[in-house]
Length: 245
Image (cartoon, rainbow, N blue to C red; front, side, top):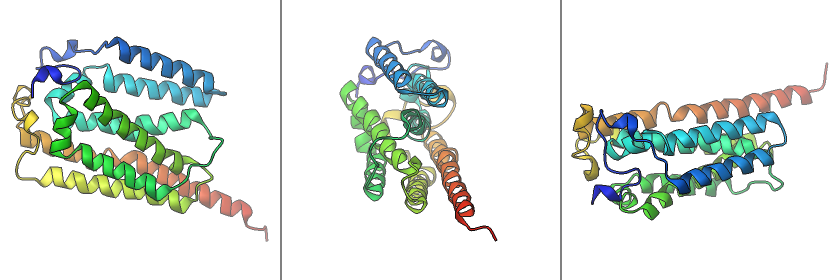
């Protein structure tokens, strides 16, 4: 696969990486429109702060040199995806605030997101995603969109705490299983990175193992924090509903 087909360009080295910012005008216009829309939609400063934080995360993911680094290192690609599904997605949901309709189908949302997460990290689909700009954005937007669906359900107070914690914990488990597969595989699985990791002093297998560790440990943090928040909210409500003796 020609490297020039990869969004953000061919794999960089250590010397060129700091200068590999992505100033794709279509991307910048899309992010500007998203920022303006979220700002106008937000009726209070907390929601506007969430919107600003979400846009910053998207800038880091798609504009900063991290985008180019993901062409060289699979671990950088996994970090990129963690930023999308575990940080940008919940921030966007919080920026939108309480929806006029109640998000439903928690188990379907979980299944769709898990399926897409596993699909795009399979070697065949991953290589397809790097074959063209259209395939690349199909991967990114489907991951982000399915993650937002899951987070809408998990963070909506109208969703029962049991369902919210189930989809959050289930997501941690399925990500952990994929992380274990990446970490303990005896061979590198992604041919596109076989010749791109040496510039950063790691072998393809070491890069893949680092990706597994990132997916296993840091990625779980936002989901576990959200679970604790839902449990704390439930306990607080129960204490308020309990009649005073």
